[in-house]
Image (cartoon, rainbow, N blue to C red; front, side, top):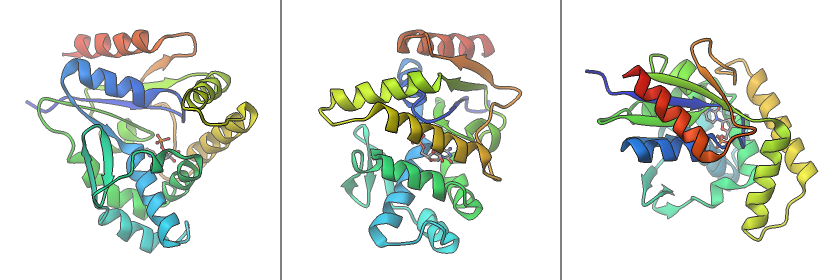
Length: 218
Ligand code: C5P
């Protein structure tokens, strides 16, 4: 029997990572936050001064990425990089390196290797379209840009950081536009993906919907 996979793709700040991690928890499955791989490549590029358009060097960095997921965080060469990859500069950098075909190719097999018993829940932009085209369940999770900006704003304020709602919304809209316009693996809802618009939903309701759909497919 093939190992089940649930893919949750969608735009930035939609809450897909939170939902994906909770679904994985409920089902006892592994969880892969694919965006963190692109973010790590961007972080390395910033730290090493690699231009964001140097495809060959960035692809090599992606191939050799010394990444480990453990203890609820992501480790880069033994350093807890969980906080360092969350910033907006790294997010925008991830969106730029993610537009490079050689970087995407370098990360492909690495992502597929996470499909292990008893199952995998993964979130990103192309998990259902490119990485796991035969996934058991494909979800396209979104929310209005205003709602996504407001969630990110509350998250930052909750962490005691300063935040500007208008700027956050503009960053979200810009990043989505870049992710949707790129030639390789653009952000879009696959015809066989189920739409989950969480604008008016709680996290628990979204998690329940995904778990329910998955059970119906078993
Ligand atoms: O999901 P997250 O915001 O962490 O992703 C950061 C960036 O990485 C996205 O804006 C997108 O450009 C890129 N990405 C991607 N493919 C994925 C996951 C993320 O291109 N599967």
